[in-house]
Image (cartoon, rainbow, N blue to C red; front, side, top):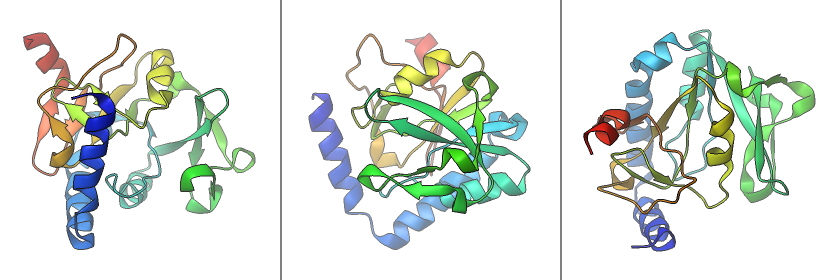
Length: 194
């Protein structure tokens, strides 16, 4: 299957999830990722403000604040297809932009350099056990993570988003760890075993 077909198939499957299941399963993913050693040891964590049907990150961000983590949220530039991250300590520092995305207001936030990131939670639509993903088609994260020298890449997803293998391109950057309501996959080990 090609990327567009897979992306559409998964989005349709996720759209059928009930609100209760969505909330319950998002909560379980958040609980699981908070036990992840990379998250426990991290000082600065990059994370998007989720849009349904992505795993809900609002509760997770609140938990990270309570743990004293610096939470950095991306601001996208649709013209250049580049991202910059800004630390937020309140949802009041966000604005709604194109495609109903909530992004930081740069004047109200502190810029965070790519090399300051200890962990980046990378969104996407479809994933495989090797950490390769099909995103939303903009390539923002693949470009951004090339500049991250130390940050571990972790993805939060529902089990419906996980496939045996997805089509990849040469520029695709795989994630290191996948966390679902029922699984933790060390994608680096999976790639090494392949």
